[in-house]
Length: 330
Image 1: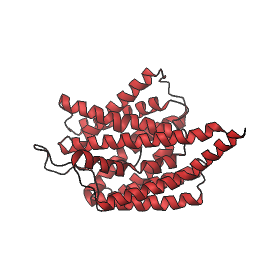
Image 2: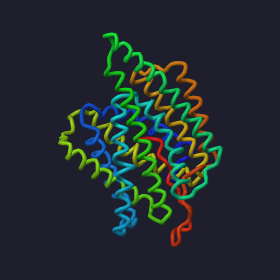
Image 3: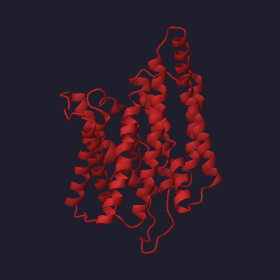
Image 4: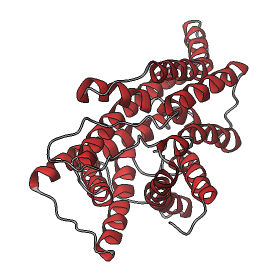
């Protein structure tokens, strides 16, 4: 990645992570979210671990490390993604992306509670501002849901569409909480000196095993459709969304530090909203525009000066500071 220019790395991250939200919609309706996530991260895990093996990167971990990686993978690459897929069955993908942008705040508060990491007032203020923006963006959808409930009470309208908004919002909140928890575990692993790429490869593999086991327990069939759009989206999500983009993101962090590279977390949900407008028929209201501005301002405040999740130094751990950023895309 070192031969690529900075703007090229930035463009790859924003374009790929900003479009993976919509790419997920091509997976829905043909396979269940559990099966889709299992296949996606099984493929991504094989790609990452194969590259590590070819480059001579050690893949050996202690049993205890594998246990922690399994927990990280189940949360970060498993159930949280299943929740994202389910959320997009009920809401435009761009709305789910904006809701997911609350992850840095949750991870930051979790780091303070678990690791004693002090959170600045600017970070909390930015998080509250971002949450207010997210609430305003979702407000028109809940307004439509309330109108649907009122119509249903008078014998008209659709109760199903009203309930669908609430279900989608609930899955989005669940995805944020699970992903943030997985990111905290990943940060802990990284700070203990576990190499990033092998850890991510095994984490993805454990995430695939977790969701695969859930799919089998629920009686879901592993029967991929013979649709070009489904296969293209699967490889796009696994390769571009899960491997290539993260390689570019880490290269940017090495060059610029976590602050400037954190701007990707601001641009990604905005691009996802634009894609939803262009390809999913999403039509935002005026209040949505205000919410977008507040969400962007909140994210800028949170990500300013490289606010990242770092636990306190542990005896015997690597002396090199290690970051494990909350991913801005599913």
